[in-house]
Each structure stands twice: as C-alpha cells, then as structure tokens.
Length: 410
Image (cartoon, rainbow, N blue to C red; front, side, top):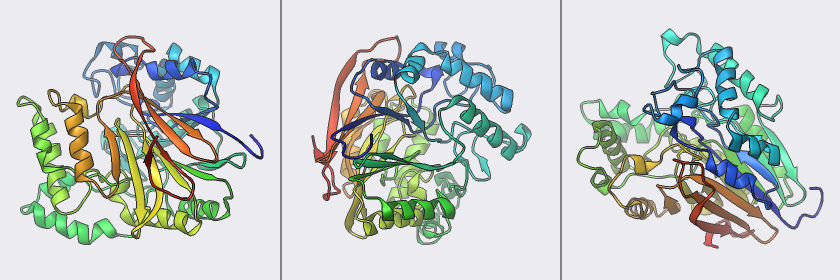
C-alpha cells in the first residue's frame, strides 16, 4: 500500500523441516483471506541427510538428495524436494513472500567463517555458503541485496536482515566452559570479558549502520524488524532437570545442566542467538530508542513461541514476537511426560525481566495484524503435523500500542 493504511496483515513462518511432518501451517495460511504478505524468518529448508536430525522418520523419504547437501546441485535438488509439497506451493501461489535467512539455508549454526555442521572434509565453507545463497536466490522471491527495507504505506516499514551468513561473529558455546576444571569460574570470566566484547556482531558494522540510519529517518507508525533468532534474553531455571524423563538421552540433560550453570552466572541459555551478542543487541535497541521507533521484532529459529519485552538501559525499547516452527520439534520432544504448561511457566518465572509468555509444544505460525492503533500478534497452533490437516487448537494473542513499547494481552 501507499499512503494512509488502515490495516495490514502478515503471516510469519520459520523452521519447516520436511522430515518431521506435514506443512499444515502453510496450507492453513494459504486458505485464509486475511493475509496481505508472508514473511519467512528462515530455516525454509534443512541441510541434513535422511536419518540425521529427523531420526529417520517416515517423512524423510520425501527429502532429496538423501545425503547432506554440500554443493550447488545438492542445494538445488533439496529446494526442489521441499517445493514439491502442495501446501508450500499453495502458500507461494497465494501471497507475496519476503524471506530472511537463518542458519539451515546453509548449515547449522552458521557464522561468517564456518558452521557447526560443516567440517574440514566437507570442503571449503565459502564455496558451500556461496552455493547455498545462490540457490536461495534462485528459488526464493528476493533480490540481490543482502538486506532491504519494505515500506507498507505510512503504517509500517519492514527491515529484512541477515544475521547468519554474511558478518556474524563465531558464537561461543556453553560446552566450551563446561569442559574446564572450574566451569563456574569459566562462565564468570566469560560474562565479565568476552561476552561483553563490542566487536562481537550479529549484523556486521555495515548492516548495523544501515539499520540505525533507517530507524532514524523512518516516519511510519511501526518499525518491524525481521531477525532469524530470538532477541529477548532467556535463562534456564534450576528445575529444568526435572522436566526430562528418566530415560532421556544424556545429551538432553547435559544441555539443561549447561543452561543452569550459565544462568547461575547471569548468562542466557542460548549464546547462538542474540543472547551471545549483548553489545550488538544494545546498539540496535539504543538506535531504536534514539529514533523513538515503535519497534516490533519478529523472529524464528527456536521452534517455540515467545513474547518478549525488549528493554535497554532500564527503559522500553520495543517488543519481540518469537515464532514457533512449521514442523521442527520444540522443547516437547525432549521433555516428554512433563506438562508443557509447567515448562512454559518455569521459563517465564525465571525470566521476568523480559519474557512475558511462552509456548513450548505447538507447531504453526504467527499472524501479525498492524493498524495505527496496535500491532496484534496471534500464535496459530495446528492440531498436528503427523497427517495432512488444517485443524487448529486455541492459540494466543498479545499486542503492543504505539508509544508504549511493552506487551499487553489482546
């Protein structure tokens, strides 16, 4: 739209793994008549081979090639196998789509110089990343610019960003500190040193400057920022170990132990998202405050649903609507036997400074409705991903009003 705009509705997706189930979220959205545009926050495909991350589920038979993708031909065939899905085809046929990248467009936990899921025997990382991004542009409706603004009349400006492939600093990992002789000391030293390093960046200096300039000259009611990963801080409560069944894999318990140790040092549970880049986060939120922007951050990656207030310097800077996945499993896959409400309540209680709501067991998508009076987000929960179905469960809604920059119930 151009000029005055009374309403604009956006459907927001992330993390669609063909090996874990049906893309019912895409099909449900495609059947709606109240969507103007689609955002995809990344992990549109996954790079793993059959039987890797998906554990050899029956749905993995649809994934081609069968091995992990490494080169141009591999990435092309993987996109082709995903886009053979009729529900994803229906989504693209119905709406314009603006895609962001996350990590699995290339490889898990990608950064400027490599990725967690890229090893020396898999060739040169730059060659693999370049092939991945070439094919992303061949298949996805996006131009050559690595980041871009999209004006939605006078109502909103959307900022498409890259937080993985171009300039992100290599992230630290909790396991780095757990392997030391004194993990508590190692976490504390990291918290007081490298964690605060201003050179650690998600966006890179060029993209940061572009974003700050955009905020400063933006006259729209809403400033909507797309980011691959969560921006809100989230730490692991001590009772998290009680959420796992007795026969849970030890790697799941270790993940919780690492998060608890980090939390005791005042650190978030995930250093791979904005939690590992606090100086960069502060610069971004400060830029939004200087511009007096009504900042709404929309994110994916985590497979779970989140609603965060985003303060900076003790003052509100914006809010985050964190999207759950289309099909990739969330916390419920590791905490089987524990009521998801117990998990969500434990997370919210342990993170009162920013986290306002959480869901850790549903697949689906977000529906963001923008008006001059409010930005209202609904987390749409699908009944299942195990069979083709457009059925839904009761979802959740929250909103933010212009000038307030904090979340409310809707």
